[in-house]
Picture 1 (cartoon, rainbow, N blue to C red):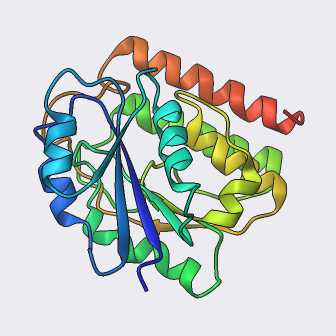
Picture 2 (picture 1 turned 180 degrees about the vertical axis):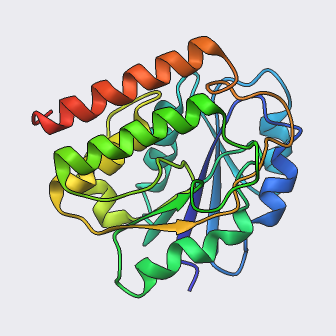
Length: 229
């Protein structure tokens, strides 16, 4: 049964996107939703040519793009949603590794851990430090162990709806994990083959402003959820 939908937020990723879409295992996936987050290149045209559904979210922000993709799926929800970046850093061929624990009722949320399996140089020192701090705070404040905030992840649709996600930018991934921890959802990590970007520069980790903004938002989000927000 094709009970999996894939959501791919994309901003100016026309060069990397074809390989990402081609690597997604079609035997499990019923729909691929590419959310064009205001691209100025041919991202939307490339996605359509590969058979993906394209929806637009003109308001910039990773979380805003993810929320728009979920709005599209809500009319006919899948059993599982997989989120994957458009830049080629993740290997979508590993999607079955993420959905398997959910298929067997061993997890509600599965994080593709870049820390447990990555290409040398794919994570910057700033990413490593910020990620380590965030997962330590989640353990201290919520009692849940995790190794990463990686964007390549799978979640049961019903669990995702319970989380009532709202972050529209850098805090999306940590909001999901912190809310899941507070609600007692079962979260597991699986190693994924995180790679250096295949094209372009990261909109977040590739700039000092982006890295600082992401780090600040991640810490703020953890604290807010711990206090009941």
